[in-house]
Length: 170
Image (tube, rainbow, N blue to C red; front, side):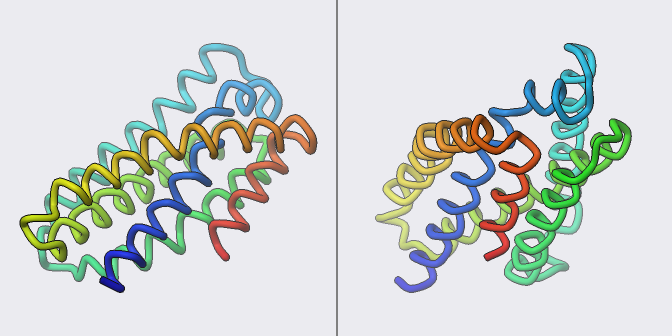
């Protein structure tokens, strides 16, 4: 259906464009923030803690908030937060932004997944979840991480994240 196609397109675009951010995090730590291994660990920790908070928050609000409206909001916030992240060189600002990015990243994925499962007929649910997994795990890493690495090598990691955020926002 049109809704399934739109959701899968959004999931594909965001998964592919987010993959470079995660794959390039060691370079982000070194080049953008002048951090070592401990700083890299903190960057990932703040992203993960944000994701955990987002998941727990979504579970806590239940159906009191429209999932479609929330998906729209977090889909706009995600690229805005990535843009801000690409422009900072202050570690504590980066940590705070990654915490917020973790929240919106998990909300985006969880809501899209739930909406897909809710609108697809029972007989097709396994197939759509297989396609979802292929996009989020397979395609995103192969296309997104590789392309992001090439772009970061050519223009620098901060510029690569900035371009990724602009593409996400488009």
